[in-house]
Length: 313
Image (cartoon, rainbow, N blue to C red; front, side, top):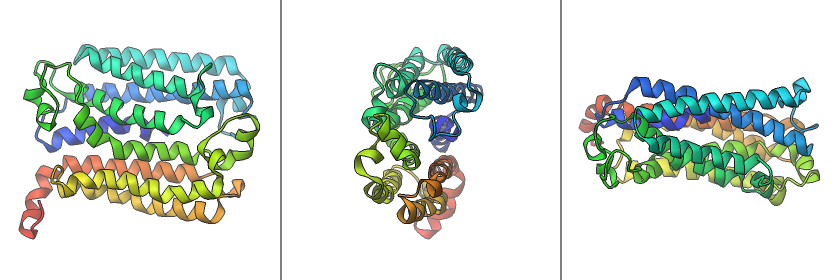
């Protein structure tokens, strides 16, 4: 699960390295650790809040509340992960820009809106858009700021050149974050989308109107190829437009699990006992695709000269 947490900062690091811009290794490591802790909070708190509604009573064997029977201890563990993750992210922000912490707090707020009372927007079918916002432009913008040199403005570290106004080190690089994070964040949202297939009856019985509940398993399964195609298109478009090097197409290494996911849901979308692993195939696609994109961007200075004789740049 934690590939979704670390992907924004890995993409930011790959993007910066591919442009010959410095990447602060200490900030990268701190951001990675903080992101893992914050996703741990999200997952554990989700177990706690779902235990309160009863939606996980039979349909989620991996819930720590179900496994341990101790809601109080799981809640304490979740809160501890949140506090430690925010403390580390505050250190990252102290060494870069206060905006980093503000953006991460916004991501946490979106996570709470998804699962926490009284909002529980995930029960209204809004979890996937919230997921895209949190793991896409917000987290990616935070990572881009965190990895940039602390003392230099955006114009000096290359962010302004991508369409962001150079108003100082606190300016948010929304343009770069949207281009870089949109496709991978859609793949992350696909993981959440696929997690609903095997528990449609339980969700519906407890008032959780997930997209799969609202659409039905057949229609929802037919959307999966389009979501995968859209995720890839958002990553390939910058290559076709000349904004990214051809090496960014390395994200295609995620296609085999994507193909397996499409076939599994096409053939068995209405058989919960056979599609419980669909979200893990979606995770494999998300992880391989995002890692391939990050590595492809980072390797551009090395591999692009080899492509020039072939007419590719």
